[in-house]
Length: 349
Image (cartoon, rainbow, N blue to C red; front, side):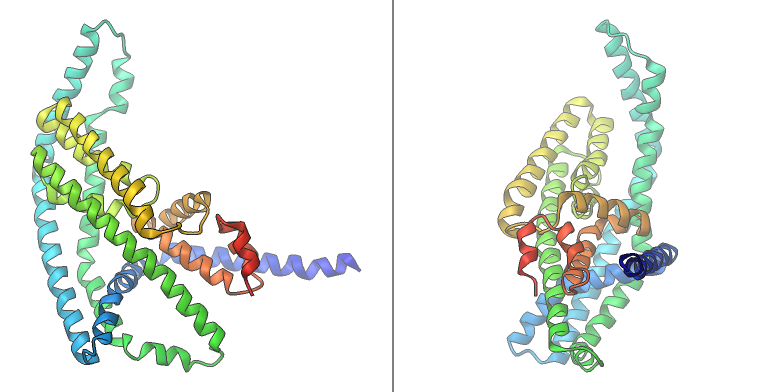
């Protein structure tokens, strides 16, 4: 009898696993279409509080929508213009940077040899190759260029999301099967994601501004681009701040040598410790409620499924998945495994 009871459970588990594989494969195949839409949704979530604040001040809905659209268009076009100019300038100077980095690398080998340190120059050259460093910077800039190329599409989707914002809640509540409990879960989902995205955007923006100021103070080329990279990559948990520091440190090295590169490293460390370890916990409160291991796994998974943008959106996507899983008794155990506070799962309905 027990064996016959087990078969349906195993069969359902296999069906769920097969469906999950199909969904993930579909997401990866549709990434070029899915990524702009997800970016547009999260941009809309970030700036939605401004729309709500205008409505609370009794600004007519039509006027609030017009103001939001105008603000989006102006900021979007301004940002695209500034970043495009920085990327074009950087691309033009890549050969010069590569030559300078080659000179610095040769100087490092000579200095080590003068100190009597015997190093396998051939092996180290493969690791610290100027071509590898420039290829990394080229990958970063090409990713940004790809986002800029889709900038108009993203902006257009955000505009249409706000055009639907006034009537979308009423549409969802009118759907068959959407009970009061389901609507409450949807509101909770949006609230969690919106809170995280809004506060994280503020701390990332502060980090980007401080990095840009530091780069300008040290005379590093393209401080706006360095600040933008710090802003974007700090959305990536754990390793984003480290990745964001590499371009600034490399430029400081090829422009002014090891001394300025050391100052740049110190500046990045101070900024990230101040914002990430001191200010961000105070602003964001008691954390995300997600295990650090789950955050790391989600970053790897979403990066594999959606590319670089998936890494940027890994935490909000995981928060959304966790809140959704908490809302169903059948999947609440998965949310418990994702949580960093096991006692909270007992509070579920």
